[in-house]
Length: 141
Image (tube, rainbow, N blue to C red; front, side, top):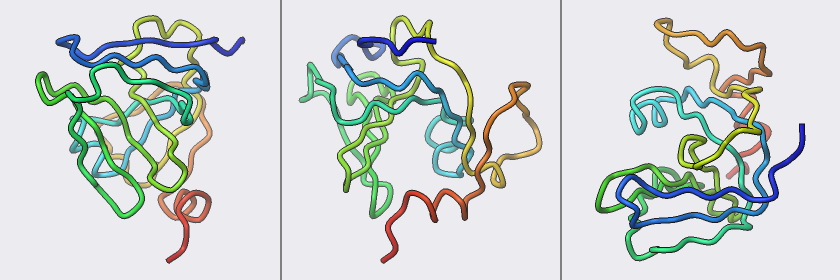
């Protein structure tokens, strides 16, 4: 599978557009309580690093959801736009935000120990628990 050169997408109302040039074609599911509350289910997203541009940035509202991350959404239509890691400046974008996600592969899940029993994905994926995620990605304070 080849990595897309770039991906573009807009929010529901078109007030915000993203052009990303470093999209990793791997979709992951986050089952943490915050992502489930934010999206109404697991967050299916792709890592985009920091190589992206926003058009309509004035239409984005960000909520600092933890000491290490913030979540952005369109202040007009409510579309979820990003999960942003403050220390690294990396952005994680919901996979459905992009207009043509044809080269994406669903291959990993995080906070798998927080996933409720009422849904299961059929894909074989790499799975990480909450403790494994914090040990790998979150700086110790």
